[in-house]
Every structure is written in structure tokens, then in C-alpha cells.
Image (cartoon, rainbow, N blue to C red; front, side):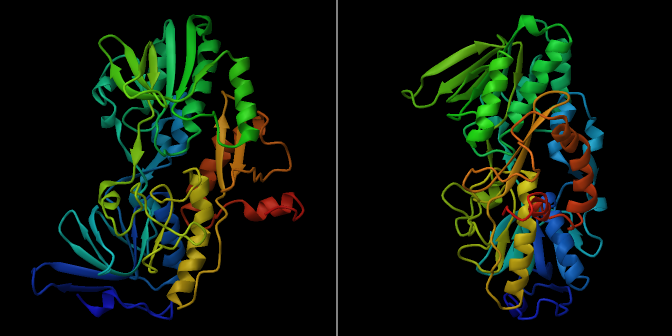
Length: 442
């Protein structure tokens, strides 16, 4: 192992040539970079863009196997027929920074004490600094009957490009009966998205003369409809007004497509206590976990399998040259693109200081946002922090359903994402918040 892979240099801008050599013991090509970013999602792209602008060419590598980068928040709109799936994706090569080396491979092992990682092709890559932004893995297989049930009528999910287009198909084919929307008993991408699918579906059925033949059920594994009381109160009222049945502490454990039945474990009840519903439409949100190579690495993760960071600085608690961003981390805030945007600047400043031999000073307050689309024209724009307290940008009550919030979600946020966030130029609305509130806001 070369000492180059372990050295932490005091000058973050010092040029470090990208090194390639053949290992004398394994006779295969080995590479080394100043900064390696694992993951080409929103966090990986934005961080790589920031540091590619800071460091000389050849110093930054991004390891990402996917050929397509998806703007996943758009899939709510795709499932409701407001956007097309092709609008949510671009070639990965178009969104990664040109000065960064794109390694089209996936990581299979981390070795943080030796400062190197191993890819599926068997290549070993050394780093001085590491940023982990691997996102979450969709565990559909943990629900009995899935994913096979997606090949049968009525079962859909907005959480995968494989199944999101079927949501609109299910709505079109709906005749009468139960339309069930689920939320699993694990951390997930955007906890508000399951409700968005439900509200859009309810309005679709209403607009197409099917609502009086439909029973809408929201079966959630959680104990309340939303973590922040202000928005929970507003959403509870939406459900009341639209006659949506909400059942808490219900976890989907099995789908029986032959009989069109969904089986739910009742959380808090004796083991094995279940309740079964017939469905005409079943929108499934899968359990999720950190990707297996990270989840099984006990040096990097906590007991739940998530990257163990200092929640304020985003620096790893045991390896100071390792940072993390986004859904694969243990940060106790909702996993959204808005959270990633806010985290990207915190990470950039603190990692840059670490490269200079200084201590991290910039702190993340847990800011996240969830635009809760409640139909085809309105939205509740939830923004909050680690303390699950509202941290709103606009000088209005964002818990109220508004057309302006819907416009921001549908048209403005995708533009912001593609043109600014992925290029490292958007780090959340903190400055706008202070401006709109005349400085009387965090």
C-alpha cells in the first residue's frame, strides 16, 4: 500500500497527480486520487462538481455504475400522469463534472483503515479523502410476493423506474374497491412521497367519476401522519375532507396477487398479528436500507447499517478523512433532495478545511424539505430541521395548500436541480430564507 493513499496533505489545492501502477502482489492496475466520491446521485454529483472546481484535474474520481441519472422527486408526477419518465433522467456522463474521472463500476468493499476501496471488477482504488453518497437500496423482496406481484393487475410503485409508469395504468384501469397506499417500517426516500401518490390518485379518481366507488386507505407503519405537527395537522384535515381512511402502525408484509389481498403486520401487537385487505389498487413503498457493501462494513456504519457521521459536521466519527452525504447516512432528518442540497455546502466547507489541516466549523441544522403535493394543482411545502420544527423559506404559511407551492414543485425545482444543484451551485434556500424574513430566520 503506497503511503500516498494514506497521506493527508495540509494544502487542499496542492496538485496531486492521478497515479496508476501495477500492484506487485496482485498484478493488476491500481489507481489513486486525492478525493474519491462513491455514488453519482444528487449528493455525489454536487460534491464532485464543487471539488472539481477547487482541485486540479485528475484529483477527483466518482464511482458510479449507472448509465442514467434520475431526478427521482419527479416520479410522483410521472405516476400521476403530469410528467413522463424520460423527463426524469439524463445520461450520467452529462451530469458528472467533466474534470472528474468517472469510474463506471460499483464498490463492493471499503477498507477505511487502509484508505482504499475495491470495485466489482476487482480494481483497488486509493484515496486521501472519501465522500460516501450511495443512496438507499430498495428492498421489495422483503415483502412476500414481491417483486413478482408487479407483473399482476393493480400493484404499482412510484419508487422505481421499473414500476412508476404502472401507477397511472392502475388508476386508468381502476373500477371499484380499495385503493391502498403503504409506508414501510424503515427509513425511506422522502417520507412524504407515499402520501403524494395517494392524494394525486384520489383526485384522479374524483375527476374521472370513480371516486364514489373507491375506498382510499393510507396504511402507514408510523404512529402519525407526518413528523412535524404543523404539517401533520394540515394533512389530517386534507384526509378528513377527502374521506381518506388512515391506519397507523400497519406494515405491509405480504401481497397475494391471486386473490388481490394485502397483508399487514400490526405494529405493537403480539407477534404475528395481521390484518388483510382486498385491493383493487395497491401502491407499494418498499423497505429500504443502505447498499450492502456499506451496510455490512462495521467500521463505517452504525448498528442500523447507515454511515455513522457527526450530524453537525458530516464528518465520520472515526475516520476524519471520510465524509458522507444523503440517504445512506445516519443523519436524523428526512431523506430528501433538499436535505442533500443543504448538506452539500456543509460538507464542502468542512472537507476543504480538513484538507487544509483545520477542524470543521460549519454546522448542519438538519434542514430538509418535502413538497407534499395534494393533487393536480396544490401543494403543502413542508420545510423543517433536526428538531422537527418548521424552517420555512417563504414569508407565508406553507402548511396551507397553495398553487404557488405546486408550481415550485412541478416546474421550478426540476430546473433548479438540473441546472444548479448538480453543478454545485445550489446549496439550499438559506440565503433566500434570511432575505424573505428580513434576517429573522436561521
